[in-house]
Length: 300
Image 1 (cartoon, helix red, strand yellow):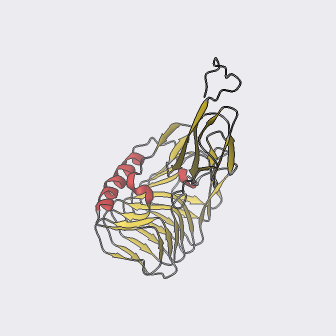
Image 2 (image 1 turned 180 degrees about the horizontal axis):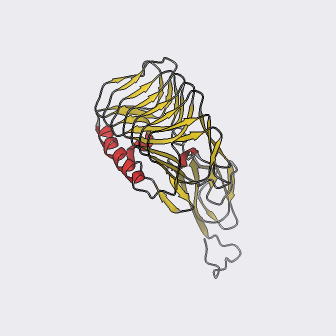
Image 3 (image 1 turned 90 degrees about the horizontal axis):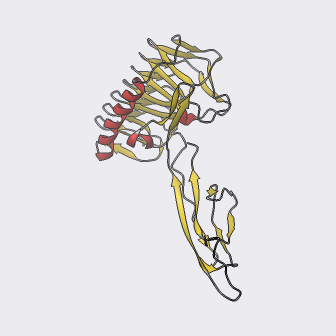
């Protein structure tokens, strides 16, 4: 912008220059709640995975299984896609899976080291409603019926579960989010195997020391990441939080981006994002010099 002390005389032309930037915000997981200051949980390369095991076989027996997000194993046989549909990439004993094997252990140990906020009984659900906190369960646990996670209007509220044993969900059980709770801020650190029951719906990112089994028609809205253990699918739906990374809007100007004071240029191309001036319209009219950009983000 021009300094306020400079006057432009009649008939002169001071040039203004615009810099246009296109930005994409990828999946960044932020957690915060009453006893834990906001901080990032670093999932590393595993942030792009819907299902991953550092060491174990990966099998799918359902033709109708659909997984959105990357999948893979660093050590173990891989028998999936086909059958089933994968909207993402496979990583089997490659450099990405090798890094993911290290990253999943780092993330698991980070969650394991957090201080417990409230102790829960090992049987959850049956309409139980929980507010944001770090919950610890001292042995193998189950979820029956519905377990409701209530963010109480805070979209950054986090729910972290530390389970010192296996986790099983019963047939038709569900984890439900209400009042602004985000799938991106739900984490399960499980010191044992996981089995999601027939036609159950589970929510959040699981960091597991053991096998991960999705029984017939179970759905996982989140991630299943194991430090060691087989992954087994059977006619399931799995969606990584936020889906695939967001696409950046392509911004174009309807004229030169260097122009005279008093003139203007229209910038267009915003699709579902937010302009740097706070506008959400598809185009904006610019009369002052500066940097202009659009931020596109996914659900996380």
